[in-house]
Length: 184
Image 1 (cartoon, one colour):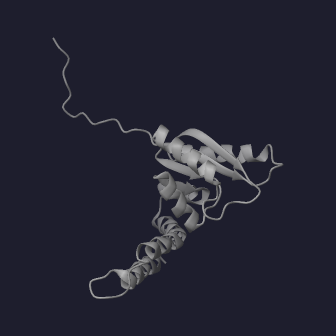
Image 2 (cartoon, rainbow, N blue to C red):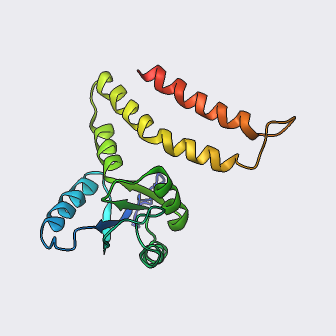
Image 3 (cartoon, helix red, strand yellow):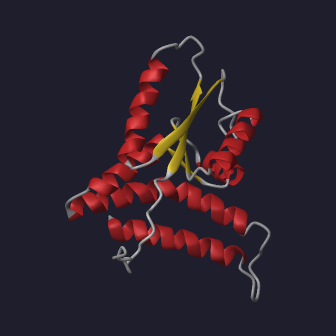
């Protein structure tokens, strides 16, 4: 007798892959940054990601547009492409413009330490009040990022008949403020 074929074949879900990146601004720190990175890796593992690579750059000052230097951004972009990375995790806190620029450069999701912590809380939240508090924190964290995206998208448009322009920008901001108000 032959083996029975199962009809309900569901494709096995692939474990998401990630890269951990860190900008080390203290050139004399030779031990503490490793401990911080290890704790950050454990947080990422709690989200269910597999870390394939760790990238560390040492600079005296972070670059205002991308946090990392031009060469390091190119190196990470190549790693994302070669290793089929789903998410780039950055230990440092990112501004909305840095997150936008890195997301465009890498072509994948970029999360900083604060967002990783919020995702863990979001997954493990049990009661309604804590879920609402986490949702509020996520919305407040995303507010400047959404404002930046809307302003860049509608930058060239002006308010006029059948144009998206300024009205769409204000509509996005109003929707964001309304959702924050509802959660509060």
